[in-house]
Length: 101
Image (cartoon, rainbow, N blue to C red):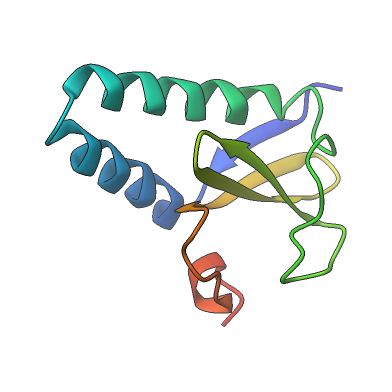
């Protein structure tokens, strides 16, 4: 399918924050987690609907993939996948986090 994958500025900040937090204990593990997040995001270009719908939103356009304990939340459009947030799985998902407010 080869859908274009792009990142919101907020999602990029999320990944930077995750890397900085993990790197305090293990720069190696921080790098591995970020690489896995990037790999999963890249794969969405070929399989944009592979992830389940985000239950808190309930709209088919918003989907998620889990990477370790992080949720990669994205919105699928006709020719684009937009990564809107990368949050810890235990964090409460609010509309503000994904740009709905």
